[in-house]
Amino acid sequence: MSGLRKLGAFTPARLGLARSGASIGTGAQLEFQLDHALARDAVYARLDVAGVLAGVARLGLEGVALRSAVEVGPGERQAYLRRPDLGRRLSMESAAALQRDSLPPDVVFVIADGLSALAVERHALPLLSAVKALIEPAVWRVGPVCVVSQGRVAVGDEIGQRLGARAVVMLIGERPGLSAADSLGVYITWEPRVGRTDAERNCISNVRGEGLSYQEAARRIMAVLQEAKRLGVTGVALGSVPARPLIA
Image (cartoon, rainbow, N blue to C red):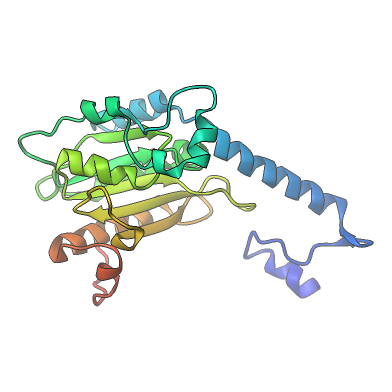
């Protein structure tokens, strides 16, 4: 048991918990209940869209607020959780608001609440800032940053298709666990269009203070974008090619 406890210095997993009769100790039980409550709160939290858009503006980027097809109302979060299909498409108003320019963007960044608005509010803007520092404007024409309420990963496909983007980079709150309620996920899709599958995306997961750093995540995003542009694919097809060094 002491060996398991020593491993606790290297992982947030619950290892070597003290026991009290047939159950775990009171301290461990209270910690479990707290982490469970934090995870539930993250799932049901409402995204501060105005705050995220203000942060996007401070980065010198254009931002636009959008909504998924989940109907607005008191029970919208429950509808979002029960009907994943609605979170994968834009509302009619949001779809109509997206105007394609004469010069379509090479890449569009989408920020969606997903299953943890907490993750988005903590990590999306710092990660976007780190990517902005690496991306070359002469190589990548960046479209408006789309901030989506009640959004799922696939909503980025419709956004990218409507804007005519060559690639979409989705920053979205991941499903909370009992050791992390604020993990941000990144999904990159080349030639986004409605109907793309998860096999056609690349995922970079666990972006947060105790996980993957903003700088490393940004480096990986740019590496995937560069390879996607070179080969014209993302997802399983991109993962099967020989790995190339990440950019410095």
